[in-house]
Image (cartoon, rainbow, N blue to C red; front, side, top):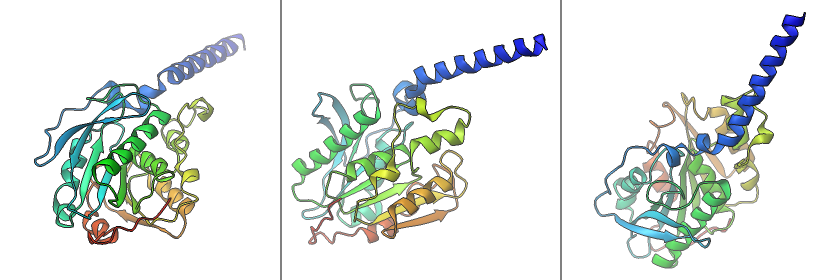
Length: 272
C-alpha cells in the first residue's frame, strides 16, 4: 500500500508539472508559426507587400492586391502554423480575380515580418487593423472575411465589429476550448488564456456564412464545425467534403465567389 501511495503521489506530481509546462508554454502550442516559422513563400505576382499599422503600435507584414473599381476585397486570415502568401496568391487569381475581387492578407503579430507577440486580443486587433487598411485603400468596397482554422476564429471576431458581405470559413472550430479538449482531454481548459469563443461571437450576425470542412480533418474534427453551424443558425451553410485540414483549401472557391458575388456595381454590405 505504501508503494502504491508513493506511485500515486509521483503520478500526481508529474501531472502537475505537465500542467504547469502547458500553462506556461500554451501560446507556443496555439501559435506555432510565431515560434517555429514555416518555410518562406514567394510574394505572388501582382501582389504588393505593404505594412499594416495597428492602433497599439505593432507593424504587420501584409500583402495587397487592389480590387477592380467598385468590386469587393477579401480580407483573409491564415492558420496558426501558416503564412499569408498562399492566401494572397489564391484570392488574387482564379474566380476571385475574374470577379474583380481584391485581397489583403496579413501576418499576425509575432509571425514572420510582423512585430509583437501573439495573443487572442492581439490577433483580433490585427484583424481590425486589416479591415481598417482596406477601408483606407478601397473606400466603400464590400468586404468578405475569410479564415482558415485559427484564422476563421479571427474572421468571426472581426465580423462582430466590421460591416461585411459574409464569412467564408474553412476548417473552423466553435471554440478553442473544445478544440483543445480534442487533443488534450485531460487538461483543465480553465488554464487557457485564449479561448476564441466563436460560438458566442456569431450569435448576433445577419450576413451569410459558408463553412467548408474536411471529412478526414483530424486537427479540427467536423463535429466542431457542425457546432459552429448550429450556433450561427439558418444563415450558415456547411459543406462537408472529402479531404483533411489542408487539402480542402480552395476546394469551394468557385461556389464562394458566386455566393458572395458583388457584381462590382453592387456595393451593399451587411452589418454584423
